[in-house]
Image (cartoon, one colour):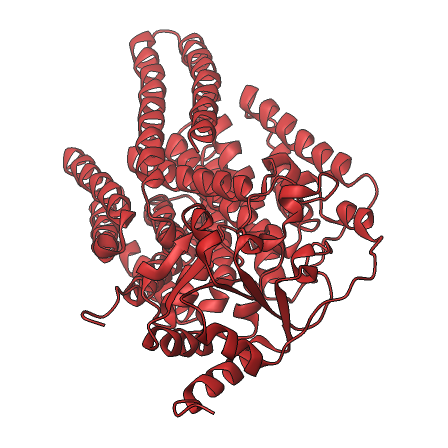
Length: 141
Length: 465
């Protein structure tokens, strides 16, 4: 288990390294393409790095927290993370709710909301339904 | 207003982490669900108050939410044997949502209301669309296989891996080209098409026994597509929640692979089909068979019984009969434990949920690693619908395709009873020496019927013959 976790961390580091290089490159080229707005460009470049920071730290927390989840509960864990990954609803709402030149973008967003909300609702409900079934031995028996 | 939105997202992130943290024991797990619901509500409200969202669009969003709820609620009522299919379907929805948002973002970046894509965002957008759509079709295929709409046997053809890898590399090259210059607009639909196709082709060669790994992997992909969406939209909540989901999928995949002693690439690219041919030379050996009455008598004499359930138990819907057997034996003062192999069933932890549904206390569900040292003291092992997970060839026969896979050491117990429909080898087509061992008795028949007969004998036997 320890070794495989190490591999997991190594994979994350690899992702970090690659995306770091990409983002630095991106930051630089943004600076080149918008002359006269260098400050804006460098702020944008920094933004990518800060989102990568968030991603790496969140992955570390995620790996550590999930590692501690009881093996008994791996099925409910998966349905719970189903619901959590339906956080895509945030992006869907933003696309569906903003004003666009054409309605078809809003429609794409609305379909995405339907898909995410169905995951949120069914994910949380079925997780709770399963967890209710896990009981200790009735006292005294 | 923007600060408030960010604070809402921060609270939501913290609640998501608590939600997963509370899953570490069954006592606090339900609190975890409430934290998750609260986190999602805060996130949605935090998004809805965004001033960029037009008031006139709220009614459309509300309608979409109602439709989503109408689809989601019935999906949460499925029987627990169908939970793997539901989970796969849910991954498909998650992938679809990410993919559609990605498509909208891409074309919006060229319209007046959109923000121009930099290289980084273009790359993230490609990753989002690629992962989203391949998760969509891949999960639909997995759900179809689990529901047995699509044949569960691995479908293989010559050059499969080359074709798959070729398609994927074309898609990746397309992504790189788009990231370098977003004006190659025509590549975008090609990437979508390749992702959809690759999802199908990736799952076709994967058999039922590998489903736990595949489902975990698709779980990780769904999470990573949300992360990519977060990079594109510069939204930290999407990144953190997606990363939590992605790491969950990663850890579960690793556990599943370890439990089968196979590498990730082996599951994806080494279809079981190639393995079956190697193990066809079977020597006719004799097995000893017993009736349910014999089995009942043997278990009555025991002090300690370990039940090894497998997917066959779930297929036969025998969980509730097993619970009756558990009651009968424990009421006689016999210790009964369940030995759970990590890959038993069709998704991680599937057996635990099925047995919990049958009201078996979770304290009697024991992990493989914890039960194995106790095995020599066990009087009777009862194998119900499990096969490869108790096959001693995994320890002894270097030529066996499952060699090296950790197993439940049923052969080390004092005696063994195995309930099986027939002597047909299991899914992987591998002979099981356990059935030919001297201390093993086979009870042939449908798991539900056989366990039912054993229970009938035990309960009717109160006065003794």
